Amino acid sequence: PCGLENVQMKLLGECNIMKLVKIVSLSLLFVVIVCFVAATLRTLTKFDSLCCVNNRYNMRTKFGQRHRLFLYAEAIQIPTVSTSKTQLNITALGEFDSLLRRVFPTVFSSHLVQHEVVANYSHLFWVPGSDLALVPYMLLAHIDVVPADENDGWEVSPFSAKEIDGFIYGRGTIDNKQSVMGILQALEYLLIRGYSPQRGFFIGLGHDEEVGGLQGAMNIVKVLKRKGVQLAFILDEGLAVLDGVISGLQGPAALIGISEKGQATVKLSVFKAPGHSSMPPRESSIGILAGAVKRLEDNPMPILFGEGPERRTFEHLFGLPIKFVMSNMWLFSPLIGRVMERSPDTNAFLRTTTAVTMFNSGVKVNVLPSLAEAYVNLRIHPAQTVEEVLEFIQSTVGDERVKMELVNGFDPLPVSSYDETSFGFQTIKKTLLDQFPQVTVAPGVCIGNTDSRHYTDLAKDIYRFAPTWIRPGDTQRFHGINERISKKNYEELVVFYFNLIQNCDIKELPSPHSAGHEL
Ligand SMILES: CCCCCCCC/C=C\CCCCCCCC(=O)N[C@@H](CC(N)=O)C(=O)O
Ligand SMILES: [Zn+2]
Ligand SMILES: [Zn+2]
Image 1 (tube, rainbow, N blue to C red):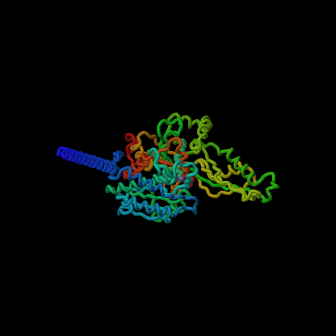
Image 2 (tube, protein in one colour):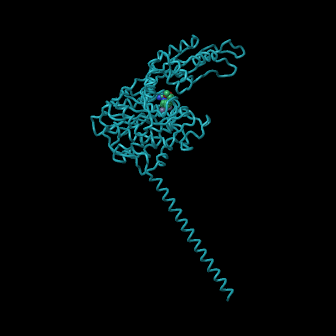
Image 3 (tube, rainbow, N blue to C red):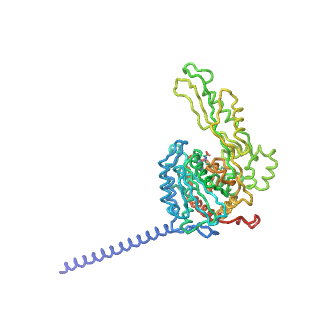
C-alpha cells in the first residue's frame, strides 16, 4: 500500500503542477493578447500631434498616420506614366480614378463637392463657398509621372512605395502625388468635420502634365472659361522648401514660384547623301551634327542673374548685403555667376539652360547615314524670349548645313504679385510660417514648367509651390532615380493644405503693418 500511496501522491502532485503550468501559460497568453490589442488600438486611434492652432478645425482624426501613409503608398504603386503625348498609361489612369473614389469617400459623396471628370482621366472639383462675394481660388496637382527604369540604379522598384529609414521611395513621391493625395486627404478630413468654406475653391488634377497638359489642364481651363470663372489665385506644384541647398544661407528657405521659365524645343538636323561606309566623306552627317551640339554645350547662354525676378529671391533671403550687391551688379555679377553655375540646380536660376536630350542617326553599321537629328530642350530665363534664344542658337551653331526647326516653345510666364497686399502670396506665406516658423519665405522663379501655365487667362496670380523639403542631393531625384519623401514630410503636406484651405476663408488681408506674420 505504501508503494501505491507513493505513486498516487506523485500522480496527484504532477497533476497539480500540470494544472498550475496550464493556468500560468493561459494567463500569460491572455496578458499578451490584451497588450497586443491595446497597442494596435492605440496606434490606429493615435491623435496627430500636428494640429492647426488658429483654425476652427484641427487635424485630429480617428485614423492614424499609418492609415494615411498606406493610402499614399497605394497611389505611388499605380504606374500612371506619361511617355509622350500619345503614350499615356490609360489602364493605370483608370485604376487611379478608382483609388481616389475608394479612399476619399466623403469627397466623392458630399453634397458640398461637385466633381467632374475632364478629358477621361483628369479631375475637377468645385467646393462652393457660403460667401459669394469672395473670389474663389484653385489648387492644382498632377496624377501622371515620368517613366522610371529600375535598372537606372533605383534602390527599390520605382513603383513599390517601399519604405527605407522613414522615407517612402517611388516615382511620383515628390512629383507630384504628394500634392494630389495631400490636397484630397485634407479636404476629406475637413468635410468629415463638417467644414464648409466661406470662400469657394476648385481643385484640378491633371493627367498629362508631364507631356504638356494639352488634354488635362487645357480642357479643365476650357470648362472653367465656359462657366465664366475668375480666380483670386492658383497654387500649383513647383518650388519647395530648400534646406541647405542655397549656399551661404543659414536655415531653410521656402521659395514660392511667382513665375516660371519659358521653354523651347529645337530640332537640329543634318542631311547628307547616303553611301557605302568603305568610302566615307571627310565629314559625316553625324560628325557635323555632333560638332554643332558640342559648340552649344561649350557656349552656354549668357548669365542673366539679377535681370529677372530671381533678383527678389536673393534680396528676400539675404536682406541688405545683397541689396548692395544687386545695385552693383556690374561688379558682382561675374563673381556670383561663376559660383552659382558650378552646380546644375543653381545654374538653372542664372540663365537659359541648354540640354541636348535626343540624338538619332544611322540604321546599319556599313551604311553612311543620310540624316542625323538632335533635339535641344531650352529653359528660358525670364529676361529672354523664344525668339532671342533661337537667334543665339543659330549664331552659336554657325553652320548652314545644320538646319534648325522650332518644335514648340513659349516665353517665360508673367510675374505674379508678392507684395504685402497680395492675398494669395500672403495667405500661403502665413500658412507656411504657422507650420514652419524656422523658414524664410521668398518669391522665386520655377525652373520647370507646370500645368498652371495654361491658366493665365483665369488668374493674374499663379504660385508654384508645395512644402516638400529638399535637402542636398534631393534635386537630382526629380525625374531621376530614388525619388522619395519622408513620412513626416507627407504628413506635413496634408496639414499644410488642411490649414491653407481654412486660412483662405479670411475676407481680406489685415493692414500690412500688423504684428508678425499674422493675417
Ligand atoms: C537658388 C536656387 C537653388 C536651386 C534649387 C533648385 C530647386 C529645385 C526645386 C524644385 C525642382 C523644380 C521642379 C519643378 C516642377 C517641374 C514640373 C515638371 O516636371 N514639369 C515638366 C513638364 C512640363 N509641364 O513641361 C517639365 O518638363 O518642366
Ligand atoms: Zn510635376
Ligand atoms: Zn515632373
